Length: 506
Image (cartoon, rainbow, N blue to C red; front, side, top):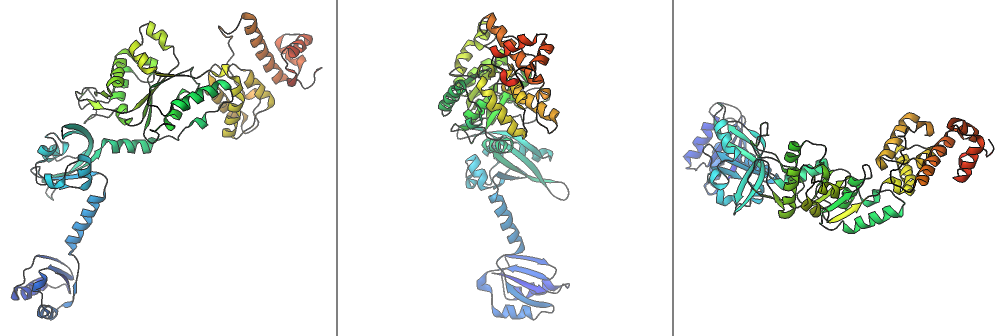
């Protein structure tokens, strides 16, 4: 039974109440006192009306009321509810390392029953080098350190943060640590860093050539087979990789991209495979998870795979063959389940012949090849891409501007078109985009496309189109190009460019 005695705040009040209870032989199981209140717990069978009458008769007692719990019991219940409601595993140990707290989340994450470990030495249950044991010795906390634990014959990694439990004098009384499953960390990183989903519907095209590529990509998306995407820079290789991921059963798990050409060799290795504590000078304490671990369950996209150094090619080949890898400086095998998509703008076959790329890795990566044609080979796609970018920028372009863009060879592909439009929007300052706002790289004559006459005619048509779009006059275009009026008119008729003239005779 629990009661609360409401009183005045006077010296001796607690003693008077206890004297009454002692006189009746009451076994006081717990008591708390605060100004204006005394809380008591004792067996219900020992409570009698006479006890209540005598306490009420004491000087300064206002009333007695039954309560469901003492303040300390209520605080313990609240703390217990909080401890059991968090998604992280919580483990507490005393000054000698014995486990005093092991919440339900810890049971689930570590697959250990609390009833089997409470009171046990944490080094025997988990590992003798768990960070929280160091905290007992040093009195210093730690954040996001990795912990490797072998349970039921299987070694698993967890992320842990811990703090010492100290008294008012600074004496370490124990330690408490939180435990996160690596999968929780991956999910958190994925939720924070996840980019807007890109699907095949986001790929803009009108040409039959691209329709065939997209159709093939849709059909292979559900597979776990490795895909090698080939195409010139700026054609949209990462766009296809993201669309493949979004259409796969792994769509709700991480998509992890990395450009193999953007990092030096040593840094690329640690980024991909992670590293152990002390693997090299300056290594983060506790080690670090690599991108392969972050991509577990999802997709990793290795762009510019042709730039990967040879020694890393060997390690990547081993991942593809065994589904496992080792961190830099580590001996432990880490299993990983992920789909690998690679991309390159180089001829990997030529690199193999030059012994710059492993032949066995090439065949492992080239399970499903996907070729993205350059924009110059699918000129029907220029107009829908242009319309798409204009909608994004909420602007318009003149007929002359469209003609200039359609005449350009686009060596930088879709990325170049996007950059040209973005620059033109800035130059037009809110107005309609015209030829004067379009800064294009000079077109180069194709090296091996058709015979010489065809190449010359293609270049002549592009130059003439640009001049007519700018001047809207055959005479002025002829002056700019160093041609007679008659020559310009003949070429206009030859290439069917009459639409660029305001008046056929001027």
